[in-house]
Image 1 (spheres, rainbow, N blue to C red):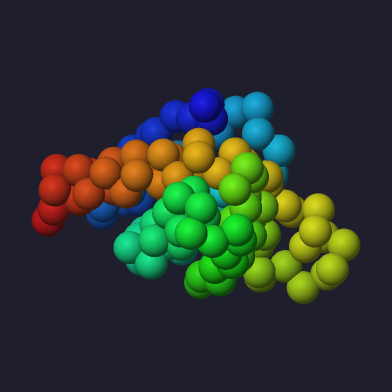
Image 2: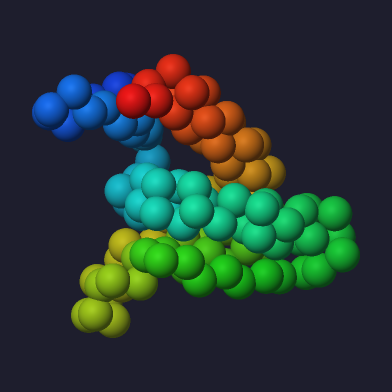
Length: 122
């Protein structure tokens, strides 16, 4: 499983946010961007695409969100930061994660965000 830590950060003016940090994962900032900018607003759609591949209904799916793209395969998923314009840097930003582990992480992240929002509503 992916080693991670959730933190609540103070944004000032009484506002807070939740973040996730990873250890031992190459290019984890791309995974952070994917969860925060793409999974959070498009949860149902992204989960459905992962589920199609994991169930065997599809061999491969690709999703493009606000910031990242995900190439979802049955074994691994490759995440890329779409905001990087340089081709070499774009491919070097790739974060490769076990597909099943990432699907579980997506559920966990979405639940943490929902709970955070309930606890910190203004």
